[in-house]
Image 1 (cartoon, rainbow, N blue to C red):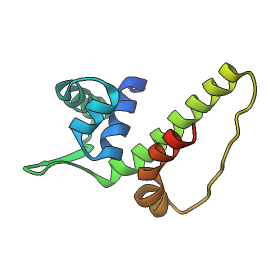
Image 2 (tube, rainbow, N blue to C red):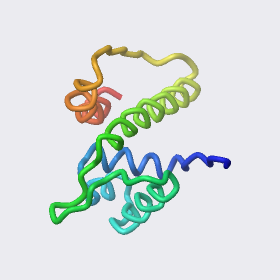
Image 3 (cartoon, helix red, strand yellow):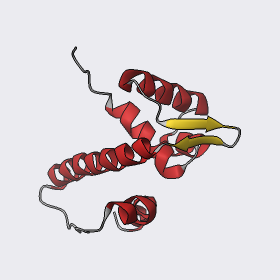
Length: 121
């Protein structure tokens, strides 16, 4: 059986939902409708063959697998963004490398990275 990789659009959508903990906030960030976000998440879950979120009256709650996958997707998207930025600017940008354990990275650092990057592009 051949595994087809998810699209970057689906992965970016997924990462945004996990990081922001909200379909609406992810839709605002990505400038699309909430319905489009929901569709991307459902399609990604179907493609992967497992649920990424627990659905409840309170909304979507990411599973442990989703949190771990979102962390890896975020790292991959950051690598792509950094590579593009380097070529666009004609040289290597200033960089910061942070080492910490997975729990700190997911629960503390991850949610703060978008804000940090907004302030320090």
